[in-house]
Length: 199
Image (cartoon, rainbow, N blue to C red; front, side, top):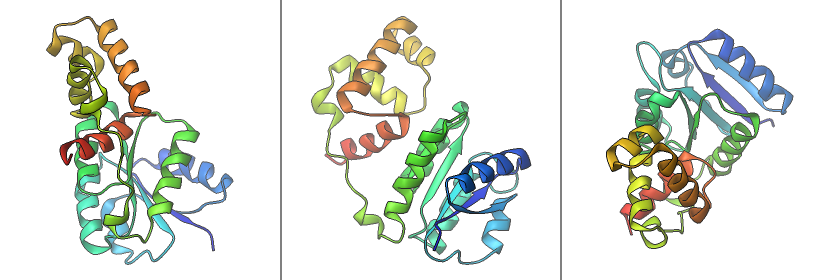
């Protein structure tokens, strides 16, 4: 039985392009123009994953994430977000979303997020693998300051302004800490921040 991706986005062009991409990768696809449409469709069953935009009218991706967790806690959710919505995406991850993808994202990033989501599909939330590396232990004091601002959703320019350093220096710190933590993207850093808070 094919794994099914439930796409929730109010933009028809986004739904169509993602549908084509995912069907070519042998996923089954169902699309919904709103969060309400997905919720009204009822229990999606096993082998499903939700791919939802964070900014939608009536009910945004964050509210949808909360509702899905309440109704079907083992249904994995991946959030799609524009750069300005990173703080919202971080909140969604704190509420249980598996991953978030910053637009525009490449196909490999999408495939990796879905792979992670389906690996956790049906598993109780407690079974999600914990991030082993503690940023506080491996980063310099300045790198850790940059790390904290990044996971709060600040872009490099704002990080530079807040720390009174150049944008180039902020970018260098970001590159260094990503390498030290073996992080591929901002979502990886956010996961590590959760582990850091609990260490």
